[in-house]
Amino acid sequence: MRKHIGTFLLFAAMALFYWGYHESQQIAEPVAGLLQKDNGTRHILYINIAAVVILLVGGYLSMDEYR
Image (tube, rainbow, N blue to C red; front, side, top):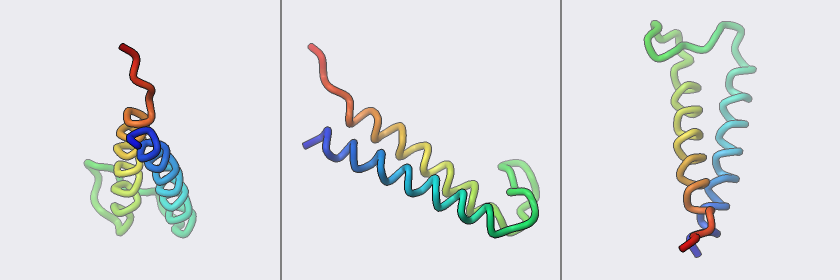
């Protein structure tokens, strides 16, 4: 069951990365970074950070346990 949840989270992370990419293609200016002034694009950074976290958790949960 844990491995299935991990696999689902990997696909969810892929969808979040695509959403962040799609959002970044809608604007003409560069995406704001963590230490830069927010120009209305900070949500794209948050989407990508969430995708990385979900990718790491999903990768951990989908691994086989070796004892």
